[in-house]
Length: 311
Ligand code: 3HC
Image (tube, rainbow, N blue to C red; front, top):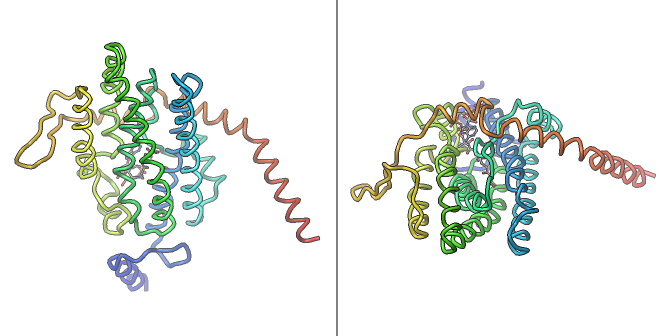
């Protein structure tokens, strides 16, 4: 019976139909979506920490207002994605517990420190730029609630990327010290940004199955290459150099060839040994505890309103 149902399910996927919460789906499809969507949501929430670090120190009111809006957007992206994950049968409390106890993964990139204001430019230009490359195909992912969440998120992500690039442009066209600050930040953020796309296809656990189920539309290496091809000219336009001596444009393929990525560093960060893993988790737990009264008040208020409606 399962083969018949699996076959019918695959035929729906192959017809590019959207799978909705109440549709039958293979348990493994449900599990891998809970895995990916919850990790995506965790990434958005943890991503607020390195950026939030500079709200009080932004160099002008305009920069502070843009950064405030961006961090608020990231929180909202997290909530859309937690809601999409909940449609698959996992509760918000369970996802909170998985993140706060260090059980859950979130994007490696947020375990790096934002040391100078130029880092905030790099987070917008490179991290949100990479996120856009990865998230635009996800607008066509086969699971309906995830695809619809992505459409809203991608609209806001482009503002994030543009304000980041504008920060870097201002610095690159500023004083020698400002340009040096932008170059230093590029040197520190370039390789970790490439790791956001995941391990090489040959070592990816989920790519084959997730592409067959049209959860993933492009492989990790394809999206990484797309990001590099789009981003290198943007950096050169600003007179910045990329920290990769093997970076060279290949006329024959039309792609930028790039050097070897340090996958040992990637594995260390995923194992919790990155520069800021412990700090991020500690800060996340402090925020969760500090926000307990808001959750209690909201639940008490909702109970009272429900009781009034019943009265
Ligand atoms: N950081 C942490 N873990 C990573 C990772 C990364 N950069 N890349 C891969 N992994 C993990 C995977 O989760 C998987 O582990 P798991 O089985 O325990 O979940 C393992 O490494 C093997 O990788 P795979 O390639 O097999 O895993 P996927 O097929 O899931 O591909 C992915 C990884 C491309 C990140 C995919 O999960 C994805 O597209 N996720 C949705 C997008 C996303 O999460 N982006 C992260 C950044 S969000 C963001 O930047 C917000 C922006 O507003 C700033």
